Each structure stands twice: as C-alpha cells, then as structure tokens.
Amino acid sequence: MQRVLARLEQRLAGAGSSSGQADQEIPVLVFRKGGSVVRGGPPLPYYPKAADSAEPPASQFAAADALEFRENRYAEAIRALRPMAESKDPALRAACLMRMARIFRKAGDAAASLESYRRLAELGPAAVGGLPAGLVGRQGAALLSEETGQAGQLRQEAELLARDLEQGRWILTRATYDLQLEQLHRWLPERKEASGQAARKALAKAAEVAWTRWRESPEGALPQRMTLMEEQRPVLVLARATPEQLTLMLAGAGFLESSWLEESRRAGARSSVEFALSDAEGRRVLGRTDAPLANQSVRTAASTGLPWTVHAISVVDGSTSWLPGRSRLLLTAVLMMVVLVLGAGYLARRAISRELSVSRLQADFVASVSHEFRTPLTTMRQLSEMLVQGRVSSEERRAQFFSILLRESDRLHRLVDGLLQFGQMEAGQMPVRFEPVDPARLVEEVAGEFRDVAGQSGHQLIVETGGALPAVRGDREALGRVLWNLLDNAVKYSPGTPTVWVEARAEGGDVAIRVRDRGVGIPPAEQERIFSKFVRGVASKEAAIPGTGVGLAMARQIVEAHGGRITVESELGEGSVFAVVLPAGE
Image 1: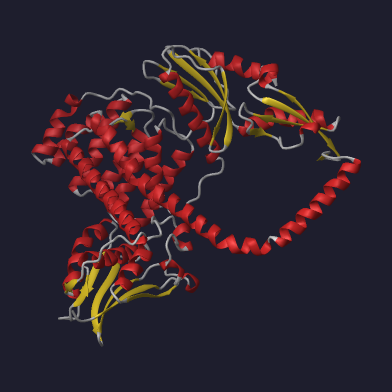
Image 2 (image 1 turned 180 degrees about the horizontal axis):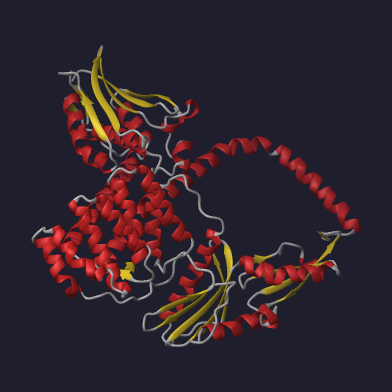
C-alpha cells in the first residue's frame, strides 16, 4: 500500500508542474490563485470553480448590436457579424455565433438560428457570457427546438447535451451542472443516470470540499492525505498545497479496489486472511470490517502512515472464523432463542407496521418537498449570480432573467403558502369563512388566472359553465385553491395532450365542478389512496413529475368541510376526471 501511495504522490508532484504528466486512471486537478483550472485524467461532472476565459470586448460588436436592438435591421446586423464569425480567434467566433443565432431567432429564421447554435456547440473552451460556448450552443439548440414545437429535434438536441455532460466535456460549476440536469429531466424525464456517474459525482464533491478548505485556510494549507465520504462513497484525496496553487489527485472506491484489495486478496488467499480498510471515524472504506476483534489484527493510521486503519481478518474455508468449537454451540442456542423471540414479537411488529408506513410516507414527502424547493432555488441562484457579476450581455437578456426570477419566486410562494395552509388544516387552526359563492364565476376567475401557468407548458383550457348556476355556501379562497390544484395536476399529468377541460353543472340539488384531462391516468388500486396525505402515485415517481403529495389530501379536507365530496374516474392511458360536488343553496 505504501508503494502504491508513494507512486501516486510522485505522479501528483509531476502533475503540479508545467511539464508533468497527469495520471490517466484517476482525475488530477490544478487550481491557481490567478483563476486558471487545469484538469487531467478522467473528467468530473462539475468542479469547484469554472475556468476563467477572456471574452472579446462588447465594443467590437457595437455596430451590429445597434442594428439589432435600436434599429431592428436584422439582415444588416447579420452581414456585420459574418466576417468576425469566421475569425481564427475562438472567443470572437463564439461571441459572433451567439449573436447571429439570437438575431436569426428574432427574424423568424429557425433553421439558420439552429445552424448557428450547432456551430457554436462545436467550439472548444471559449466562453460566452461566462459559460462554455459548447454548452450555450447545445442548450440554445434545444430551447429553440422546444420553442418551435419540434419534439423529435428537441429530443435529439437534449440527448447530445446529456452525452456531453456525462462525458465531462466542459469545466462547469456545481450550480450550472445542477441547472442543466433539471432542464434535462424536463426534456428527457425517462432517461436514467449513466453507469458510474454517481461515483464521479462523489469525486467532484470531494474536490469541492478540498478546494473550499484550501481557500478558507489563511496559509493555503491542506493535509497531504485525506479520506472523505461523499455520496456514501470513500474518496482518497492526495493534495499538494501552497498559497498560490492547489494540486489534487482523487481516487475513488473502484481505483482503491483494483490497486490494493485485489492484490491483498491474492496474497491473503494463501494464508486464509482477508484485508479491509476503515477511516479515522471507523467508517468502512473497503472490504468487511464487522468481524469480531478476536479474529482481527488491526493497524491504525498512526502506526502505518496510511490514511486508513488496516484490518487483517482470519477466515476459514472462505468465511470468517468467528467462533470455534464449544462457542458455536452457544451461538446456535442463542440463535434459536432469537428465533423464538422474533416469533413472539410478530404481533407487535404488525401493530407498529402502520406507524412505519406513515414514517416512510413522511420521508418521501420531505424528499419531494426538498426537490420542489431545490429546482427554483437552483435557477434563482445561477441567474442572480450572473446578474450580480455583470455577466449579462444585453438589457433584453437582463429583462428575461428578471422575468424568470419573478416566475420562480411566485412558484416558491405558492409552494410555501400551500404547505403552511396544509399544516394549519392538520392542526385544526385554519378558519373557513362561509359566504354565498357563484360557482360559474369562481371557475372563470381561477381558470383565467391559471391560463398563464398552463401556457408555459403548451396547454390550453376549455371552460364550460352551462349558464347560470345556483350559488353555494363556501369559502371562495379555499374552493379556489382546490380548483387550482386539480388544474395543476391535470396539466402535469397530461404531457402529451395540450387540452384540459373544466366545467360546472347543476345536478339536482348540487353543483358539480369537473376537471378532465387525457393524460396518463391512474390505476384503480391507487384511485382512493391518492387522497391520503403524503401519497403519490407510482406513475408520478417513475416519470419524475414534481409534487409533494399533500394537494389532493388538502382538497378532500376542504371539500368535506363544505359538506361536499370529491371523486375521481380514471383509466390508464385514457386520462382522468376529478369531480367536486357541493350542495347548492346559501
């Protein structure tokens, strides 16, 4: 182990010099105070900081920008940019292609705009607006395909973007990487994470931790050897740190396994010994460390000079020899007693199984809410960072960013407001203010407010109120929240059908409000459970459709507080109809 570690540190010393060669088996990163980032070996999904890349001054494009923004003379602006778009300077060429793609898009020439974005995507490390030109090109082509309704083309462009992210083509920060993943989950909801991506994310997080410690150290100091547990995976970090430069080498569990454990197993096979590693906090790094201490020979990091504790474990016939002879009889007797205790505790287990089920549902709820918060917060963080750092190239782009920030803020407000109201209802503290409510007017008002939200995903609402309807006695705000929730679910669960119908009808002495979609549908076994708190359908989890699992539970409580009922009729692949039936009369 010491020999392998010494060889790695020798490579690390070479990687930190201008003439050194990086290891090709494990990632090597070099950070300099001046801002440059050098990487070698297998790429990572993201890095602690992005590589600084000079961009041409905006004054070079003053004439073309004036033709585009002030005079709307798009053809002349394109002619002014074309010579620079053929420049040998990648940064100048990238800035021109980005502007040309934008101008073609404004002019309605989607084909020319797509071609410009694709040329931009092929550029190297040049930067546009603080982001890699290739990333801007890939994302621009996908957004243009989505905007023009080209579903097949959008999928093709999104697959290219996903491939480049998985291959680590660009040096991205974590915020930028997470934002791209959120976008890809929207475009390709069924796409699974590539094999080995979780291990690479663990390496990236370890690099982020080490870089942060180096930046926060007054002397720029860092331990030469560290073992970090990221994503529940061990990462060996070898570091050479000075106030001006940090060089890191990151070895994951796979490398440790192939470099050390395989060789130790071959040696140990001749002497019935297995080897394992644990970190300074006793957490397992490699191998099995749970054998009794009587069967282990342990050497701590202080005595070996390694970054781990080494365990040599005695085994017999390929299994750990825990207890010999008479002790095995005692262990057998103990095991029999355990079996009897487990049998006697079966009824107790059934009694608490319901509580365990609720706990699991609550855990799913926390995970769902965390995801719902992370999506808008990630977007807001990146856009705010770009605005604060002045990396927005035009007032039009700035206005677009402010619009996105406002939309995401509204989304967070609705989410927080809904969770607070659900908490009040659970505690029995939410007052219901009854008054005469016109159901037709209520449907028209809520549908009118929701149309902007539906339009963002390409959906349209068709409203039918069936003329004058009798009033109902209810809380206008609470009933509006029920209808909004049903409309929001109809849009989310019908991605392939752009139309959602809502109608209000008088039926005997009741008023029925129905929301109908032609979406994925709900299995019969789930149609009653979805009205329970924290419960989400299997289809929503598999398709990564956002939600918290409290909307329909809150809707049922509100409707029942009004003396009404809420029902669902659905078939898989045919869509769903949710009906809210309220008693008529004031």
